[in-house]
Length: 239
Image (cartoon, rainbow, N blue to C red):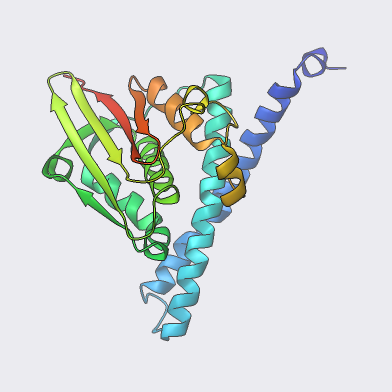
């Protein structure tokens, strides 16, 4: 009998299970997404408007499943302390464009838009593209969820010789001072979040904070109840 397996903690077993599931989901989900994108681009013939709308719905659903898989994989890698850095020079605008495309249905539903400052349109950072996507998508999704319809989300950057500070700002409900110490802890969700957004797990910000720290950066935030929040991702320079 394998004594090593018997001595594993429940958390370790759950973590390993999440890793296996995440890897098994990733391949078929990627294949479905590629084929749906190819069909939508007309590579398999002309489509009617109704077919295009249906395919866009499929792609959005697949992306949600892909996000779920990515979340499980990140939890597994963080718990196991697995190296995950695949850093390269990327433009911030390319990451933001990918993020905004993924949350476009949410933006459209709430009639919101994202405003970039000039620095965010031109700056390059050294980061893992998928990690950058995950962190900034978390910021943007939270800003959308907790802001009123028709409002604006701001994205700005301050750069110096040591790195870049990327900020996503909303003008929503803000965070209660009672909740601030718990923000970013595993599985934490406010009562309002549990009531209004029932499909959350309280892991997104926890993962974003740990991903930033594991790759040499840091996430901070400041918020005023009733006036909005600003989430900051500090990305150190490699120079």
